[in-house]
Amino acid sequence: MSDFELKEAIATDLDQSFESFVLAFQERIYRFALRYAGSREDAEEIAQDAFVRAYHALQSYPAARRREQSLRPWLFTISLNVARNRTRRKRHASVSIDSPFPGSDGPLEIADISAEAQPSGVAEKRETGTNSQPPSPRCLPVTGRQ
Image (cartoon, rainbow, N blue to C red):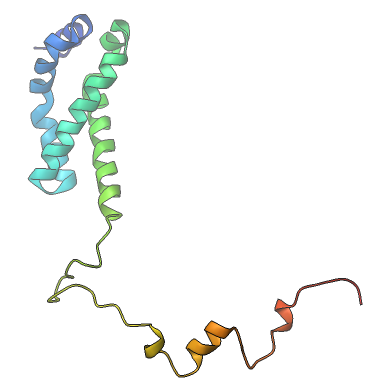
């Protein structure tokens, strides 16, 4: 099916022709995603997400806009944006302190900072609010002119 015929079919009946759209571009989008992501699993997810987003976008467009749409560059732009978004999310992934770190045998051990682990007298000063040093002049409240 030519690009013109595909555009016309999508403009006429998106639901009937979307499978043809996917078949026409799936291999190219997958290879593009594979080069970008480096893993087959990520490439499959990127391609699938790109087609889902393309379907939702095409669904919201009027028929005239679907006929005028340059499908290939538009779909590659969607795929690139999906891939970039996945990369950003992966970079900010959180790690549980209960999970083992690479190269270690178990979870992260947190140092004990209870009163017993502190130098003598520190815990008592915190609890009672006493301190042997006067407050810093920078911390004194301003109450009026002197």
